[in-house]
Image (cartoon, rainbow, N blue to C red; front, side, top):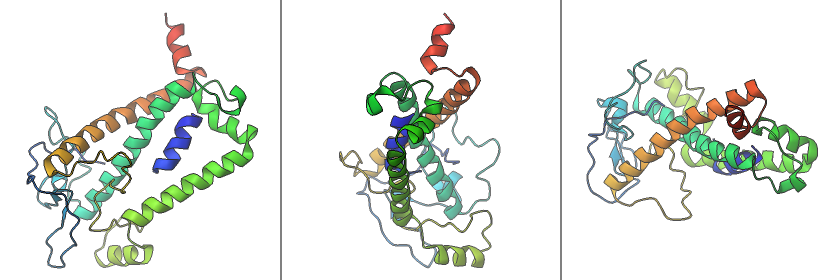
Length: 241
C-alpha cells in the first residue's frame, strides 16, 4: 500500500457517463474564456451543452450509453456536472494506482529494509510506526499536491461561495471549478501523451474513465477482501486452490 500512497499523493485526489455520439469538431484544443452572455468556452474541444446528457462530456461506450439509472446527473447545472466529473476522474486515477500498488507493494517492498510487509491495508500504519519522519514528509507531499490541484482548477473560496449563494447552488460545500478548467486537466503531462486533436482527446479520456471506473470497483474489492481475510490478495487467492 505504501507504493500507491506515495504515488497517489503526487497525483492528487461522477457521474460522467455521457453519450458516445458527443459532437466534437476536429479542431485544436483551446482554453478560451467564459462569456458572461452564457456561451460556454471550448475546452479541450468540448463545449458544454446544458441540454445534453452530462453537458455533453465524453465518457460513454456502447451498449450502456447514457447510463445513470439513479438519476444523479438529472437537473444538474453545468458547474455541478463538471464538479462530479472532477471527482470521478480523480478517484479513478487514484484507484488505478491503488490496484497496481496493492499487487506490487505486497510482493515487492525494498523500502525500509523490507520491514513493511503483509496486507496492503496495514502498510500505511507500518510506515507511520517505522519511519515517522517519512510519514510526515508523505503527508506534506499529499497536501502540497492537493493545494496545487485546487489552485489550478478551483475558484477561490470567497468567489465560489458568493457565486453559489447568488445562484442558490446547494450541496457543493463552497466549491466551484473555474469556467476555463476542464475536469481532471491539471496540466500534468510529462510524457506529452495528451492529444491536441479534440476527437482523439475525447477517445483517450473515455478510455481513462472506463479504466478508472473498473479500478474503483477493483480497489474497493481488494480493500474489503483484506479487511475480511487479513491476508494479502495473492495469499487469499492461493488459499482457494
